[in-house]
Image (cartoon, rainbow, N blue to C red):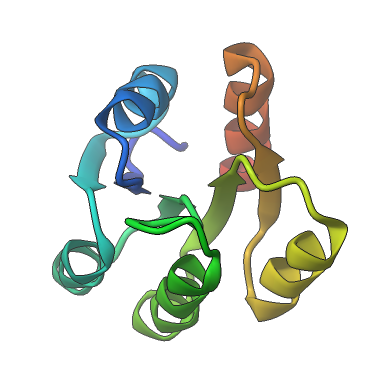
Amino acid sequence: MIADKVALIVDDALFMREVIRDTLDGLVGVVHEAGGMEQALSLARLHTPDLVTLDLTLDTEEPAQGCRVLDQLVTIAPDAKIVVVSALDQEWLRRVVLAKGAAVYVKKPFEREKFRNVIIGILEG
């Protein structure tokens, strides 16, 4: 059952956090939100999420910040399913984050129903 899962949304854009929160509504039991790296890591330590959605360009246009967060999240919450959600559409970057431990890479903008189905598949799988 996935309704008892804890999710953490990491995105510096409030609008995207709201979109993802709405999409997760009814799928998971608890949703936490972080607008930056330090808050994301703090919440991950505190709540041990089952699912993390992670934007790579936190407070910058470069994906390096998000990759650093990904590296630390894999250590802090090794059982969490990490979904990278990014507007960057670069195959090399997709390969890098999947190799670092992300479960899937989702390109923004996304169709909510397809995104929802991806989340269900990851949490039930």
